[in-house]
Each structure stands twice: as structure tokens, then as C-alpha cells.
Amino acid sequence: MSRRDITAVLSFSIVAIFFIFGALMIHPFGAPDETGMDDNIITNAQTETGANNAVTSVVFDYRGLDTLGETTILFTAVAAIIMIFRRLNK
Amino acid sequence: MSGMSKIVKTISGIAFPFITIYGLYIIAHGHLTPGGGFQGGAIVASGCAMILVSYGSIWTMNRVREKNLSILESLGAVCFILLALLGLGFGTVFFNNFLVGTNSLFGVVPAVGSGLANINTGGVIPLMNFAVGLKVIVGLFGIVLVMAYASRTKEGKK
Image: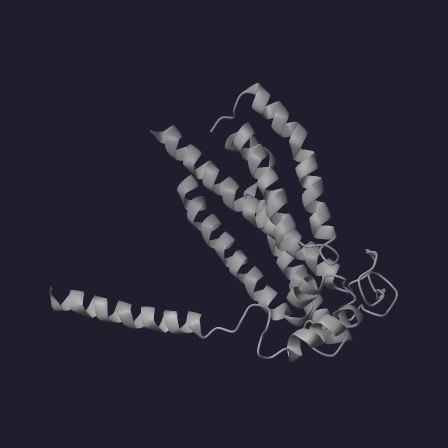
């Protein structure tokens, strides 16, 4: 085995150990450690945003900047693809 | 791509309005039912891609210019950012939901708890859904159309 193989195996094992510990120490499903923000959104979403769908109220109101980033990513992707293929069309 | 057989064209022409209406329904009811601008826009864009595949890229490109698609997509993005800036102007912060509680357009506050859905709620959320939906429809369809048209040119040159 060359030095490169040994390095690869070592780094892979270290990353795998981190993942295994992360999977073992995760909290049980449906029982998060901190519930303050969830309870706040569930109780106040209808009166604060007026939307019955709490997920949409999070996506477009509480986390609106996240959606702005998503649309920016989509816009950049479309602009780049149209730019590339417009040159191919000519 | 010069289009498929007459059977495929007829069937896709029949199915296209239903797919479009379903996608627009998901966009318009984004604040009440699961879904929203991104998901409904993807549905409408896939319906447009079906038309593109069955009728061919030359037929579609003659009717829908890519320049118009770029203008519409930019319009959706500008509307989205403008709504967020209006929250800064009329409300307190960026992305503030300034229409809630005004009892005007989309301004009705629903009753707390699970109840019947009223479409006239949500504040700026439905308007943002419309903007994002327009953007996703036109953006995804523009990508597919431009790629199909470019592959057509390559095959023609060979």
C-alpha cells in the first residue's frame, strides 16, 4: 500500500467514526431538545401571518430571506444556462 | 426534434390544460394546502415540457421566444423583491407581512385552530407565491426549451 492509500483509508475511517457517533447520539424522533421556536410558530403562525399552512408561513414569512436565496440560485442557474446555449445556437 | 406522431400531439394537447390548471391551483392555494410557488411552478413547467417534446423545439421556439421568457422570469424576481421591500416600507422590517389584519386583499386573519380554508387570507404570502410561481414556470421551461433548441441545431449541422 502506498502512502496515498493509507491516507485515504485513515481519513475515511475518521469521517465514518464521526458519522457513526452522530447517528448514535441523535435524539429520538419527535422529541427535540429545544421546543421553544416550534411551539411559538405553531401557536402564533395563524394570527401573525394569516396563513393556515404553517409550512408556507415559515418559508415565505419567517424565513423569507431563505426563499430569496433560493430564487436567486434559480435565477443564476437559468441565466447561466441560457447564456451558454444561446452561443451554441449561433 | 421535429415533433412526434399525431396521436401524441392530440393526447398531450388534451392533457395540457388539466396539468396547467392543477399547477395553478397548487400555486394559488399555497397558503392553505401543501405546495406553493415552487411545486406548482414545477408542475406547469413539466406540462410545457410535454408540449415541447411532443410538438418539437422548432414549433415551440417559433411561438415562444426565449427573450420573452427571460423578461417574464425577471418580472417574477422583481415582484418578489418588491413585495419584500414593501414590507420594509409599510411595515417594520424586510419581508414584513404588512397585509395581515387589514381586511383588504388577502388580509383576513383566519380562526385559530384547524378549520375550513379561506382563500382570502395570508397577507403577502399568496402574492409571493404568484411571483415565485411565475418565476419557476418560466425559468424551468426556458432551460428545457433552450437545451432542446441547441441539440436540434447540432443534429442539423451533422
